[in-house]
Image 1 (cartoon, rainbow, N blue to C red):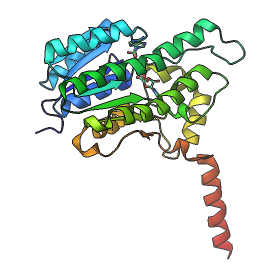
Image 2 (cartoon, rainbow, N blue to C red):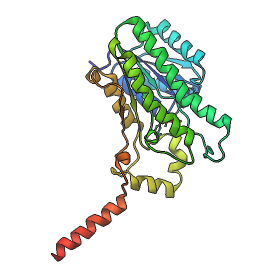
Image 3 (tube, helix red, strand yellow):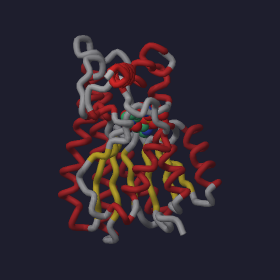
Image 4 (spheres, helix red, strand yellow):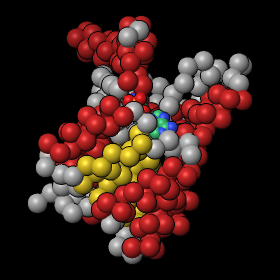
Length: 273
Ligand code: NAI
């Protein structure tokens, strides 16, 4: 018996990275999966991985920047499976060249439309379907450590993720009495397509690993583990919060090299004492 046996989970942005990781993990735990994205080939690959777990997969092309397409996604889900138990608003973009000083209106709108408006209407459509059925459910939105930080180079991304962290608090209040919870996950640096360019720059990669207390980048499985918990019955009292699987990077002003130097200096002092 899996923790999610008999449940139906909709995951947006499930053609790759964190979305695929959560889709496959939910399937391992027993759920049937609706794979929503714009990338057809990626969706088919995720669906294949879900079916390998002997669970059903439905792929639906859906641009989350378009409310009509989100509504159609949930209509297709109900038509095929008759229910929605878990919805993950994961689809997101981190665009280049969105520096505060040069960002255009189009760039701002695109990031906010996908990362914040898309999350809002995904949660709204899922919540209304769950309330209609009356058997509760789990809403999960993917924020980021950038919900906590600013960045001159990605202001719209930071604002969108800070918005997601706030948004789940409002949904938590709106849906809690229906047996539904709404929470966010704020991942640190995870090895996906989104971070490929960062990881291909040795200087940036080294700096970020140095700032991460556990000393490595996360994998989609690390995000999926938190999602699997939030989606389960065990998380029934967790509502309106954001969990950060980030290796400790948001804990403060950490440097691995500084820590090593401090420990070495202390050992030297102890030796001399
Ligand atoms: P990814 O680029 O591998 O996956 C993003 C997916 O979203 C892609 O499959 C893409 O086709 C889809 N997508 C983009 N725009 C869409 C739209 N308008 N409608 C439907 N689907 C769309 O990147 P990753 O890392 O898996 O990102 C997933 C989520 O995780 C995003 O919300 C991202 O902001 C968040 N995140 C990622 C972190 C990381 O280090 N990789 C850290 C923190 C948060």
